[in-house]
Length: 556
Image (tube, rainbow, N blue to C red):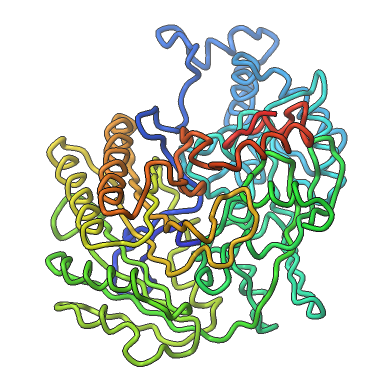
């Protein structure tokens, strides 16, 4: 839920629900009908002959017996980068170490490990080095080095590291960690908060709590500020205040040429538009200034249901999706499984109210389902409410496939199809003698997510809103990659086909970028905004420096 579009495990701690009750995330994962985005050997390796030791044999000057542990890892990493097209990464790292002493790290150091680690193990890569800038000048130096001549190098920018797409914030080149950009500065006179792009949302809420204010951000602990704020940002407050991008008033940006600018709608409306959903295509954002608002205590609960109560739950969700007018209230239904046995599947719903106590009867449809088992955590601070959800940093699943279905209103027919696809994947997994760590299918029935939309790269116009649902699988065995990628892709197609039949989706509806697989066409990420974004890219980054980093790449 880091943004109910980053739903990770929706298990409430202490709530008696399995820690495998997952709801997915803000950053998407594996492509439909494509290879899984996981760490793989370079495709040009002759697998019958290649070994790490054979590479080392080619360097007689190395004392191989002295290369043990972290030193051996460092040597192999540098050799692989040189062999498979990243020779300039070593030069870039050497230049960075000279320019930024004490901020560049190599294999074997704790900082290097932390800088390269991602939520999903398979999206982490061994970079040649990592660097932790702590000022705008540092970021300028880094960009000038990785973009120039003999030190031109692939790089990646990591905020919280929650993306599920391989290579979006990881690299074998220079890994840039924004962890030292961690400021949270509340300005009471302007009712704004300046937030460093290396922060995490739960820490932001905790630091703002003494001031009695909050911002529109992620919904589960561990989700980073940077990726969500550059993508879109669904929130507990979305029906009241819009998406995260709708609440940003300024970006501190280091442009691809190393120039620092403060980007607002008044100073540069085109670039301001592009940064609200355009991810890392236009430079490196070091901080976001957001509107703050008064934050009271909130109320939260989770209700678990027997699987045979799904019809009643679906009716409750449809009624909520089509008729809820209390925009302080949020409902998040989740189908989840931690294994293929019947007792390892569950159906639950998270209920949230942005106030100390919900109006009487507001959630009765969910509490009155036969067999419902409520776990009412009750009234607490907003920052503590977010912390009741499982921290995504504690999960670290080996392999992940994620997808999304754009839906306007969730009807019983669409929800039935979601359940059917959930059960199909479990049955096919069991029949093929495979296993998964967790499987989740979850709708996100917002009432008016686009009511406060602003001119943004992420298309979310008031006249056409869709609520992104999340489909996600985690597993361990690499031999099951194709199976689960195809299973999630097939479920996505079937659910959207049913939604189209019921008039609640269109084939060209936008896929929410923080859930979408890496292979998603840019037309389904940016829609009609793509042409304008390409024009802005041409002006801002004519040398395509940001093309050296991964992501949904807009070419100049």
